[in-house]
Length: 322
Length: 217
Image (cartoon, rainbow over the protein chains, first blue to last red):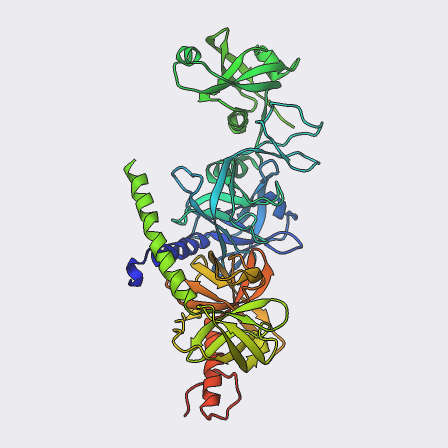
């Protein structure tokens, strides 16, 4: 069999091509005493990297794929998602290409990093799981949340925002944090991080990472909203779904509303089932967290609930989580 | 959906290309026993020639187990501790030598398969990708050598075995088994230079052994 139609050779070349393509937008981030880490060119003069690898605010150096070293300043950081945005002193022509389609469990994924000036590094795996079954506790070890966020009490620690994650079995070599997780086309499906949960290879989905990068670019931080509720996901019966006028399998039953909270002021009641926020359907706590971040903070926002089996809209001025 | 069907058909084509490659390599893969604990792997590199790691070929007299299970005696022709390689002579007539690739053209992300006998288990294949080409310092004359780093799972017993590309060509000899998920291989062009230097020496060339300069001028 000639190499041109040997599927293994074709696949191998395609993967090396993907690494080369994505590697041209993967940079070295030198912002800590230990070994450098990695980052991706989000825009011609902006590098998105992992927050935990940026230990210093000044004297940040970024190593470009062509070997050139450029100074950078911190544009903003979001410890909640372990992302930081750096602004380069000069612009480059290459930028990373985010994936447009859906990321699926089982698809090929390559983790990339550029922790040294000797070239791009790669490891191979598949997407093992997508979701956010990982809760991150501030000042404590990671906790596997068997249940989604907000569903049960946990040991008195403040829960950090549970972001969506892509889990892979690609090996995260030292210095891969902040580097891209790519698909077979060389398109970015996520940003590698190991700072949130040690010992697990996790990536923040690119759509979310890009959203946070845009916010960091504009405001220097990511605002996270606060309602003041505890909730529990509940299935929506066919009757409830037809009352709602759309297919939605679950909603969030409010089991507690904090006194004086934005939710209480806006008129949310224990027993309401929250099904949407600012026009987006909300079917689980992760979706609620994501819809609660960014521009809605501080704004009067329409919250869609099922009350007594009937749809109702409540306007709540979203608070800010400290 | 039709695209999903097309994808699974494509995946079907991989199986024969994998199994063909594996069969071809295993025809030339041997096990090297040194009489002490453990055993390593070796590859048939030429007529009566086997290449393995220097640290596998601890004694000058060794046993080699051929792919058909037969055990033959082997002697060490030459060693190069700096690149951890040893060239053995053994009766391996009829076993085809493996082709090798220009390992200077190895690319990050390309598929590689490792063959060996991890923890004594015969003929184990593991797969991964080339992570990077690194340079490591040595204590010898070369001062530093290039080395292939991959994410292929390697264990003791993989030492001396081939790291093979998707076309079935040897790109390196698995050498530094760090354990688990980090493996290092001596690039095939260094191995070939070592073997050619020995051939030149055996053919009456009096130049120093181990120097990759086979052309007599």
